[in-house]
Each structure stands twice: as C-alpha cells, then as structure tokens.
Length: 412
Image (tube, rainbow, N blue to C red; front, top):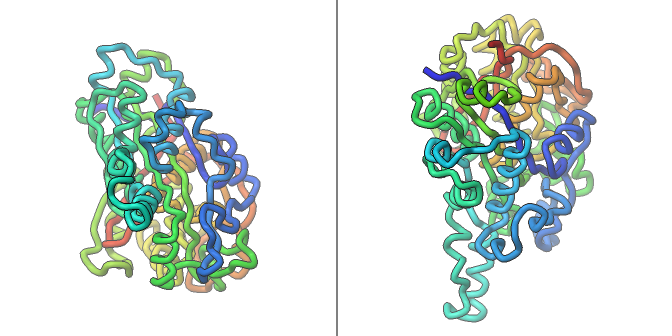
C-alpha cells in the first residue's frame, strides 16, 4: 500500500486567517471566542461564539463567484487555496484525473437556508435566489474546490456530525493507500453561527452561558465547565502518496499512519466508553504504533460535563500507564477556538501535524481547577515543547460516531 504524507496546510479559524496566524494564537494561549456579531443575539441565553474575524472572501475568491457560495463554502475554497500554495503543488493535466477532494461538513449552508426561508416568508417564492440550493447543500465545499483547482478525481462530502472533517481525512488517505488517487485535498468546513444553530444547541442545554466572560467560557476538563462554545472555520490539507511527493521533492510535514472509525451504537448524544476506545485502538493498530509510543493526543474535549470525563477515561483505558504516569500529553484546543463542529476534526488534525513538525504542543487554556475525574496531563494554559513522534486526534459526534487519526514524524 502507498504511504500517505501531508504536504500542505490551510487553516481559517477564530484564531486567525491563515495557518501560521491560527497556530501562533493557539501557542500564545489566546482565545478566539467573543460576542456574536453575525446576528443580534440579545434575545438568546447564549450570546457568544468563536467567529472568524475580518473575513474578506474576495481576498481568495472572485466576487462574481461568491453569489454561488454559502460562508462555509468560501471558507473551504480559501483554505484549499492556502493549502495548495503551502504545498507548492503544480498538477499536470494527466495528474488531475488522480487528484480529488473530500470535505467534511456537519450542517451545510445553514446561513443560506435561513436567509432563503426569510425571503420566502417576506417576499414569496419568486424572489428566492437561483443559487439557494447550491448554497445549502453540503457537498458544494468539495465541489467548489474541485472546480476551482481543477481536480477531476473523487469529490464528495462526509457528514458525520463533529467527526465529519476527520472522516474526510481518513477516507482520503484510504483512496491514496489503495493507489486510486495520488493527491487529495481533504478536511472540513463549517459556518453555523446562526439563530437556528445557536438556538438549537441552547435548547439542548449544551452551550456555555458565560456571556460576560467569553474568552474563558470554553473550559475543557475544568471543574467549572458549563458547556461548549460554537465556532466556525475550515481546515484543508494536501495529502499525497509518498511516491508522488518524493517525485516532486515536496516538503513533508508528517505522515498519516493510522485511521480508526467506530460507532457507539448506544445513544443520540451521550457517549459510550467502549466506542471511543475502539476507535483509538483501531487507529493504533492501523498505524502499527504501540500505545506507549504516542506522545500527544488532541482531545475532542468539548467542555461538557459528560464528554470530558468519558474521553479522559477512554484515553486512560487505551494508553494505560503512558497516560496515568502523565508521559502522554493531552490538550483540547477547543478551549481557544470553540467547537468548529464538522470542521473540528480537520482543524485539530492540522494542529497535530504542526505539533509533529515543530515539536510544540498547544495548551488547554482556561484550565484553572482540574476536574478530579479528569486525571490526565492536559497541558494547562501554557504551550510546551517536546519531540512529538506520534500524535493522535480524536473526533466524536452525535449519533455515536467516532474517528481517531494518527499523524507520525516522517521517516524515509
């Protein structure tokens, strides 16, 4: 089977527009969470989110093309262009047949859907935009990237709630491993800071209500956590077969060595312990990496009462003494960015890749009073340095869908 390497990264997050901007903010322990500006939240109990600030899509996309796109699609296409530039990738016409795009999306064009419903109610069906449907459907992130970059290989969306972006990366890697693609643009995108999304999660009692202190609202593994914070953004990676990357002399960040996916088959929203453990063990087996050789886990770590405890116990169950002795470092970067839903697994996987490439681990900020039921080393508040040979990313979604990915230091 072909080995799969990462040669380009493109991030757009609440921390910044661009990979290095996002990474710098995470390492500095900054927060991207603030008061919602995309709609008036004054009638909501939850009024905070991790928004992408200063978003000017015309920096990346022609103005006439934007009418076709929801915000999540413009994020995705811009991230793909950043990843392409970072990879310094130039595809021949023949190579484009073996280059594709998978983008994980949780909810699709929710902004376009809500605006379209308003037009329908206020002005009638004759005033609905001809681009409404293509703005709403989830696969248009992958579709617009494929059209924009001339990728003629497979193109589709993975939709598995908060595991969507991670599943896209895992499935893209599988296409390359089997020799059916040489290059894949893969990741996730989401833009759901809307009344329906915030109101829906608010009704579930899932969100933090720290409106008076948004920067400290997301508190994974902290005793005082009161729910997660919605975020938005995108993360796209360039994945290549090692053969293709070496042939063109590409810079290699890391290797995607392990992919695990499982289902709890248990409950709509409450996690099981066994499902996440199976996902992690599957990824370790796929990578051929012993549990005691993993240096860092970027946890799903949403800042919910049940979820943080469950994941901590699952990590302890899989990694044993490596975790109990705190040799294994764990952090949740959702503490800084909020929860990017369908994009979370992709963005957080890119953070793992950067940790492997640069030997730096971003912290869990706002961890002041660690929950005694969360017993691991969560890299509290301050970034650290160490040689990271293997990093694992966890992504778990509603419906009991789990995905774990392992990124390893590239060794030729």
